[in-house]
Length: 160
Image 1 (cartoon, rainbow, N blue to C red):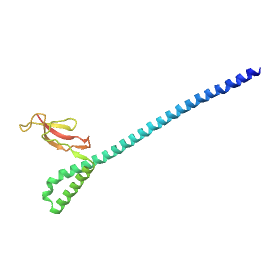
Image 2: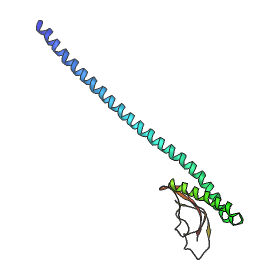
Image 3: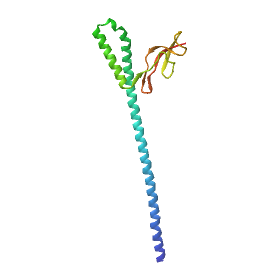
Image 4: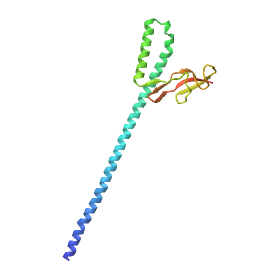
């Protein structure tokens, strides 16, 4: 009987050791999954934060483009204004354009370019011999890019 007791005692520590190893492996796998989940969460939050910042910047830049459009429409009529007023308006216009340039906002080329629906919004056609069919003949509203992305398409009339 003493032999049986020693055998059982020898088996129990070995089984306990295997059980503990198995639990440790499971806990380690859970830890690695939690670590990977947290890393994915952190990347998703960073990506969302960046998208939100770009979206906010885009909204502000679009509002500034409306102001620039107003200056573009007003500048041809400055000849009737006193020279000091005309120069002040031109200076503000240049400052706005410089601000857009710093933010990597660039005007889209239009006239004499092939119509591209990703860059241009056609608002009409023009009968002309000066341009080939499908070429942009007239720019109604300037379009802009923010880096490689179209911020606002150019509104144009296309030659037919």
